[in-house]
Every structure is written in structure tokens, then in C-alpha cells.
Image 1 (cartoon, rainbow, N blue to C red):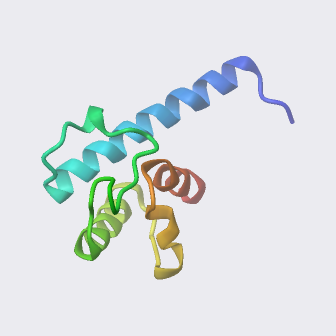
Image 2 (spheres, rainbow, N blue to C red):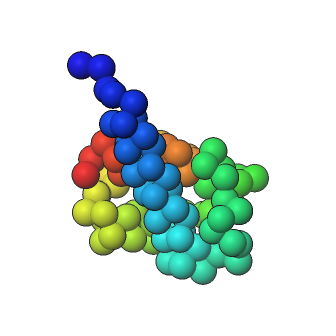
Amino acid sequence: MVATLEETKTAAKARQVLCGEVKHLLVDRLGLSVDPDLIGDDQPLFGRGLELDSIDTLELAMAVEEKFGVMITDDDTESLLSLNRLVDYVEGNR
């Protein structure tokens, strides 16, 4: 099935909203000192990205489950490598 232009626009807008929600969740729940709007969609969450650590990983997984009803298991930790991957995971598991 091929999506119409309107369906594509609606899906893109929904993803943009979800990205914003995840960015705000990251900043609020983890107490990051960064403006959520300055977090890039391809921003790595670890290493030279937002520099999250293992405690942050647990906190983020709990926050995602509480807000979106999506559980991130130990097998799914690759979904936490970047903001886009996390949003993909949430979208695919709602």
C-alpha cells in the first residue's frame, strides 16, 4: 500500500511531536542541563553525545515505559544509541 501525501505529512508531524516529547523526557527526567530543542534527532545518547551513563539508561528506560507504555529490555538497549533510534523503538512498540 502506498501512502498518500497527506498520510505522509501526518506521519512526519506525529514523529516530530514524538521526537519533541522524547527530548523533553530526557532533559526533565535525567536533569540534563541542555535545551531540549538543541538536541539533534541523530544525537548519540552516550559517549560524545549527551554523555549518559548506565544509571541514566535505567532511568530513561523507566521513564519511557511510564510515559509511552513501551518497555525497553536488556536485549533492546541498541534502541538507546541515539534519539532517532529511541523514537523508532517507541513508534514500533506502542
